[in-house]
Amino acid sequence: MPRADQGREPPLTVHHLDQLLLVCSLVLLVAVAAVRISSRSGLPSLLVYLGIGVLMGQDGIGDIHFANAELTQVIGYAALVVILAEGGLTTKWKEIEPALPAASALALAGVAISVGVTASGAHYLIGLDWRQALIIGAVVSSTDAAAVFSVLRKVPLPARVTGTLEAESGFNDAPVVILVVAFSQAGPLEHWYVLLGQIALELAIGAATGLAVGWLGSFGLRHVALPASGLYPIAVMAIAVTAYAGGALAHGSGFLAVYLASMVLGNAKLPHWPATRGFAEGLGWIAQIGMFVLLGLLVTPHELGDDIWPALVIGLVLTMVARPVSVMLSLAPFRVPWQDQTLMSWAGLRGAVPIILATIPMVNGVDTTHRIFNIVFVLVVVYTLVQGPTLPWLARTLRLGEQGEASDLGIESAPLERLRGHLLSIAIPEGSRMHGVEVGELRLPPGAAVTLVVRDGKSFVPSPTTVLRRGDELLVVATDPVRDAAERRLRAVAHGGKLAGWLGTDGAGAGH
Image 1 (cartoon, rainbow, N blue to C red):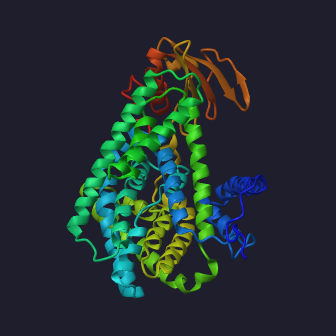
Image 2 (image 1 turned 90 degrees about the horizontal axis):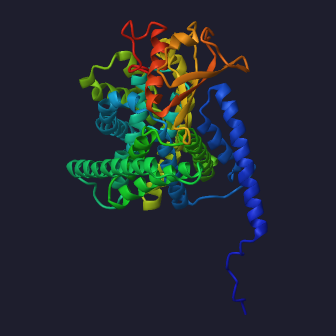
Image 3 (image 1 turned 180 degrees about the horizontal axis):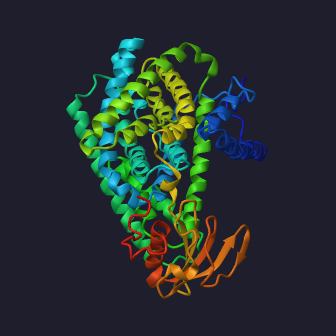
């Protein structure tokens, strides 16, 4: 007679938890060390994380058998929310504002063009039926926020380029998700005008939700004094996740909502902002590592052989035809220089988002879903390996991203609540015209003063005649009423030298 508990899963014990924690901690340590390796070699870190997952999988040394597409999709969505929140929090409004029309055109018209061209290539060159071709075309037409944020912020590009690409990566997830879900449903495909109306409605709901939640959250954090500084980062991330959930529950785009809410919060001058940004960046790294490792576990390398050639062909159509055509047509009304268009065409980086979206047809039971997933996986790995490391070289070749373009000041502000003041940390980069300026010639407003200079690892209290040099780090204390004026003056001197103001140079254009 069989036992009553026969066939049940063994209970989870503390010993199993210890083993799980050990594996997770080792994976995180290896991933953190791999960031250093990838930064030196120029390889995007996402490839390293995918490699870790593949090595842990059933064809690797870990021999872990994992095939749960539903769990991967849920965790991938959660990770993407965190990544979009981190990207929005660290996006400067002054850089992205001029790029919003162009980025919106790329995220809407550009996606539609890219889907059509890529799907046509998959149908006529590879022989996929139209449903499969449209799914692949939609899946790979979304640029990946994690890849774009991590790669572009290491390349000194003009603000008009980085602003457009970052905004596009934050915006285009929403219409692509709608298209992939629509193409993956059973039954006949929706008419194009129905899809267009659905996309417009969901984007409008998501945008309204994100802006409302972001404004209310920033208003509350500025007017409610929390008892501990460590609560501010938690509150900010909770508000961002609330925007996603609210947008999704309202049948809108949760991804657009979380990005816009985070961008509002990131530009609201909240208390303890450096700690909040560091917390968000840490969560973003954990989300990237966990997401890519899990996707690496889901893939079965020995099944990829038959799909390598189709992936290379579709990727070639996407990279060399679909993306350039979509950029050229979408940006035609904005008179964007051809150098910028060329770089934007090559910088349409793919990452985890297409691989996560490839799990949607798997969950919905679309025919040959494993082939779709394998093609997308190979395409992302190969073309990220090609595009990521060559992006700095292309920027230099096009004479974009020269050192003079990156001469903006890095300013951090920490509030001194009891004294109603702020502590500004300023790093003087190469190309800054603050080099050679005396401290007294900064002409900071009354209520602001340079209190410390760090040079070559040594700190000293400057005098009014101390000459500043490239590589110096300054600590400036400013009272609350003059904090913004002090920052504007510092940026003006960095761009216009000691005569800034008299020569018509101000800080408003810093970074542009």
